[in-house]
Image 1 (cartoon, rainbow, N blue to C red):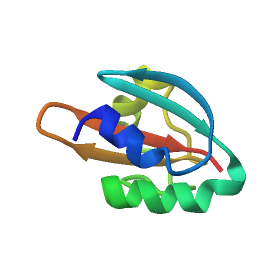
Image 2 (cartoon, rainbow, N blue to C red):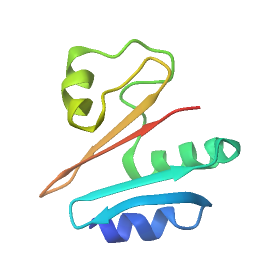
Image 3 (cartoon, one colour):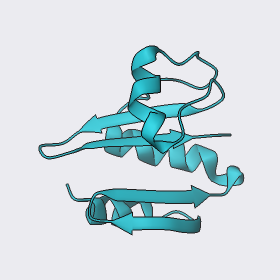
Image 4 (cartoon, helix red, strand yellow):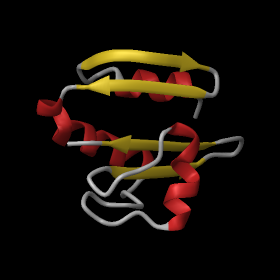
Length: 93
């Protein structure tokens, strides 16, 4: 699955801001009121969160997210490995 295909799937929900859409990077901002719908869709695409909300991040979580600003306890982290890339998503309530 390509980033563009993932964006198409996510586009069914209300997106507040598209910060970046590149061949290897997608960054979106969505409205807090839609968080349950986003959680459901991200789980469909990526499976269950590897770091649930309010769970302390592990060193692996920190290492994985450091290039993108890191991960906090009050965020949820999803990860999915594809053939040519790894997709991560962080979500704050």
